[in-house]
Image 1 (cartoon, rainbow, N blue to C red):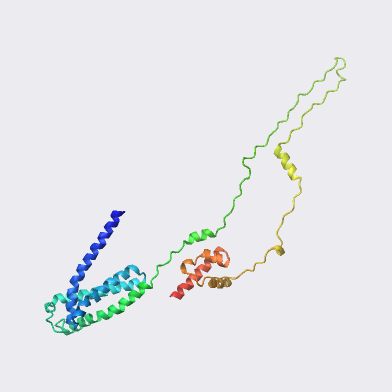
Image 2: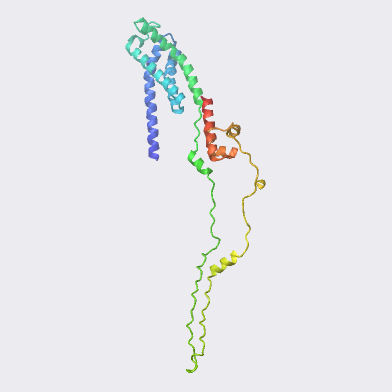
Length: 296
């Protein structure tokens, strides 16, 4: 991490050194051009800062601004870069400019080209005042776009949580005890041989089956009388008037009038006007479209 930070610092320092040397080379040419169009010694010395300095300001504004403001800063940067390049090129073509032996207002032998170059050199300071102040104002009034919450997460938060009931018993209910009926063997008639026919057989005794504990519990509980439950009458319910879509939209407009764009979510509107998630999403889209039309 430290090595990466040191590498970035070294790269920035190298860039500053290169830009400073390039400015020194361009400063010589622009100073001579300013002297040729009638600037005194002090004005000719400050003239390169007016042109190349605005290029640096436009570059910083390009890194800060976004959207149309960034496009404007790029156009200013490109325009002043081309203007500085043209003036440096003229300085290289006219050797008399190096010793300032050229006549005032004479940058080219052809009159239309000379007029265009003089107009370019004299209009750059005025353009620096206008474009520089505009860029500074845009940078000072620029505010980064707020981070909007994900719509999917906002919609998920509207779903009610359902509590799942669990058993209060620490252990599971034991299985019901099943009892097998015991069938006794059929008794045999006992008697004398002579009176065998007069002896009546004893009927077989069969034990009654024992009901399981679970069945007995259910039978005991089923014998109790239960209260009949039905629909709650309308008189006992709390009256709640139904609002139309226009009424909801009017309430949402009044409640979110001072809200920023980042806070304008379906969840926030639903809680504020107390409506369903589907209507809250519709209100959110309508309010966002209205704000977009107002901004346009």
